[in-house]
Amino acid sequence: MDETLKVIDQRIAAIAEFVSKGRAGRTKPWGGADVVICSKPVQQSAVSGSTAFYPDKRQVVSPFAEELSWLFESLRDAFGSSIDFQSKYEFYARLADASDRYSATTPETSRNAEGLLLTVLSEAKKMATELP
Image 1: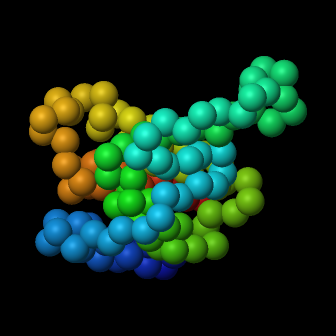
Image 2: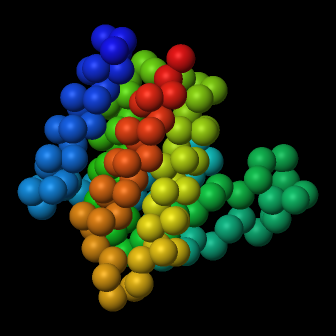
C-alpha cells in the first residue's frame, strides 16, 4: 500500500471513530468547488444558470448541514494535497452524491447525522483507493 494512501486511510478511520462515538463536530455550512451545504434550500441567483457564465452551485440540503460541513472539512484535511484545484470538483461532487443517496434511500424518520456521515465516509474510502 502506498504511503499516501496509508496515511489517508488512517485519517479516515480516525474520523469514522469520532462519528461512531457520536463525537462528530459541527461547523458553519460549507461551500466550495461548486457545492453548497445548507439546512434549507438557498435561493439561486436571479440569473439562471443557463444564461450565466457560471452555473448555479449544487445544493446539498440536510438537517445535518453543520455536521456534514464538518465532515467535508475533515475529509479535505485528511486527503491533503491529494486534492488539487482540478480534482476538488469531482471530490466534493462525489461526497455530495453520497449525501444525496443517503437522503434518497433512507426513510426520513430513520435519518440521522451518524448514518449520513458514515455513508459519506464510505464514498471517501472508495475515492482514496482510486488515487493515482
